[in-house]
Length: 215
Image (cartoon, helix red, strand yellow):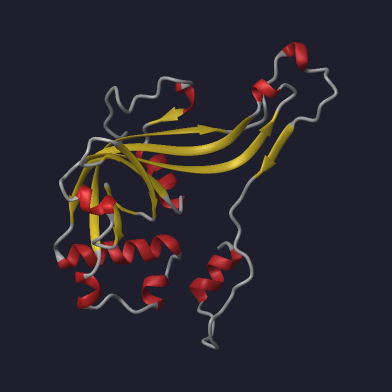
């Protein structure tokens, strides 16, 4: 797969060796992250950053919510947006406080937002967002009816530029600190499902059991 297009705004300058423009890497991070943060300028020209659920279909990122949402109402005007998504994989504890860090995977993308009005594309966005939460869930739940489709705003962000940045591995201490008597290492951080909390006696479907077991 080719690299994502880039310019000065998406170029990784700080620790560029941790950066990647590979689409496969970028897509994987976006698909694993459960939320993203959308940055844009409001009608008064002030910066705003909103956390929200998202889903990717090819080179398009979909957002949805109430038509009264300030973010979605603003983005109807085909605004330029920046979106970030981050996964934390571990806390990195070094000998020195200066070298403490996180192991992480992140994406920053830039694109143009547009309102989705086509019914078929809206349905695509609905399915993608539900599948993003739990794979297989779109077949295990009722699709939106016409009233719900009309009552939901959907925004598509065409991904124009993107970059990924990652840190992995142990802490990197200064040689002068290596003999200090402080513990060093990585504390792994993972999102793991807890015990299910059913609402009624409906049998638990396979797609929920698979998600619970981490498959």
